[in-house]
Amino acid sequence: MIVNEHIEGYIDSLIPDLPDDLRDLEEWALANGVPIIRKSMQQFLKVILLERNPLKILEIGTAIGFSTLFLERFSRPETEITTIEKVEMRLKDARKNLAGHDRIRLIEGDALTVLDNMVLNHTERYDFIFLDAAKGQYPEFLKPIKTLLNPGGMLVTDNVLLEGSIAESKFSIERRDRTIHKRMREYLYELTHSDDFETVILPVGDGVAVSINKEK
Ligand SMILES: C[S@@+](CC[C@H](N)C(=O)[O-])C[C@H]1O[C@@H](n2cnc3c(N)ncnc32)[C@H](O)[C@@H]1O
Image (cartoon, rainbow, N blue to C red; front, top):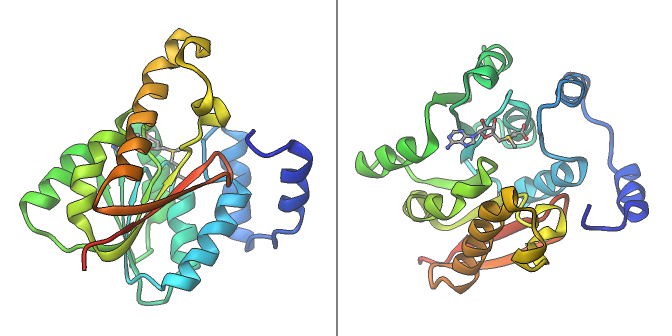
């Protein structure tokens, strides 16, 4: 936890309840150990969506579709959402949960390959990209994301502070977590030192990086 537990609990207590269907799905995810966006991140996304009004959204990391349905619910009625997931165990629930949602397109496969193909095929660009996938892969996602994000578009990256351990020395990180620690640091360094993006890192949820594509 990045923010003091007390404070996070207080902030969460102020967040309005979810609509019933999303609340049920959130409960199911939490009961079944599926990692989904936290309350504070949900509220953050809601405000950002209202402010930006994106018409084309790309999500990397669907899991069972909770955040996808959340993005659909709190975006404009004409907004289209493309979401990518590769793990069959998650896909079987995502297919079910997203069935009948015409504004959502679920792409099954490894996001790195999918993004590379999108770049190669010059498919549409997106106004808003939500990155919530394998943290160790974030640096590799950055190049295709830059190409796929519209000028002025926003990239929101979740879980960038790794429960606060991002600020610790690599020597105090458990050996098994060192690669993710190193790669997330690389990612944040690249994002914050890139000429392509302007980025702010905020201690919301597990840490969020908000980046704007500076291309005019
Ligand atoms: C934190 S979960 C996503 C949670 C979801 N955004 C939500 O809040 O409801 C991350 C998901 O990304 C998927 N994932 C990780 N790396 C991926 C990749 N390279 N391509 C596609 N999916 C990936 C995982 O299988 C996992 O389901």
